[in-house]
Image 1 (tube, rainbow, N blue to C red):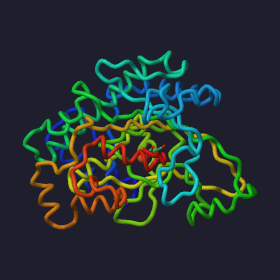
Image 2: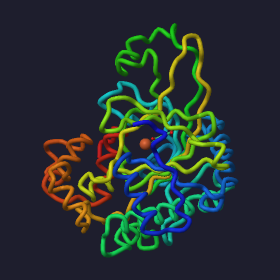
Image 3: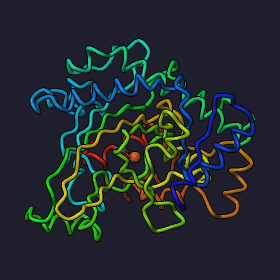
Image 4: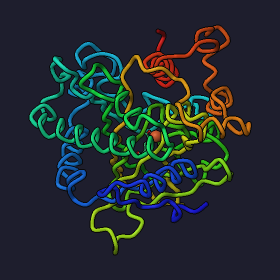
Length: 366
Ligand SMILES: O=C(O)CCC(=O)C(=O)O
Ligand SMILES: [Fe+2]
């Protein structure tokens, strides 16, 4: 496939026809663009969030490390700051962690104070929570279209399972920063380059190959800072995805959406959680500029089960033998270890699944 095949869909007037377009993109590419009409997620908010993110990552290591990921100060598990090489999205393929910094912000839960934030974020907490709710609302609109596209009789099947007013969800809004680098060639760490894979002499991998853990991800990038590449299951070559597929048509870059592992599980693999990475091609003698991105990872309520959705289309797909939850698990290398009897034999909840993925990503002990 080529990235130009990923459709830009206008969902401002939802209809069964639009639902089919969303379903088609989700089951073919696992990626789609949503047209940003300027209202869905106001571009001024996107710009303001990027400015906040730049200020945050420019602050000193001492300031950021006060809010270290998983720490009490940062509000607990999966919240707060991840230092350079602090996480590995592809632990089997990469020896070193990703050369990026990250700050994870959870959505405000009912009756719970906003997670503690460093001063340069907390002074804009109303912008952050407005941005998070715009993202959440867009995810709900897409989920509603997917339920219609899949002909699930309960059109609220997905949205009810992502209703943030009903309890704790695993969603995370993530700011990402990939620092610039000096030209490669004489850094003396050839061994590490080799460990990272065959093509790293020509390509620096900034975020290792992975699929996202949750339901849906919304991804925001800056013009001139593309970097994202997909590995469609039908091919073995990495396909770059532009920030704005058609700048002359779309005044605002459309919002990139990708299907996460949970939607893939729920639909026995009919919807594709496509493997992707962030890479930069090294031209001899040239360094790499810094890169910023933001990802909103939409997850369900913690107690939602990883079970098949009631859709004839999903049952028919699974019956053809192309899909199935077990197969999906193997494809995504989600055998959580031979000792993990529960993951093998029982239906996990969304929270149990997320905790297992985080454990692998961060090398957590419990
Ligand atoms: O930085 C990007 O463009 C993508 C990051 C990503 O795929 C992720 O954090 O899951
Ligand atoms: Fe990702």
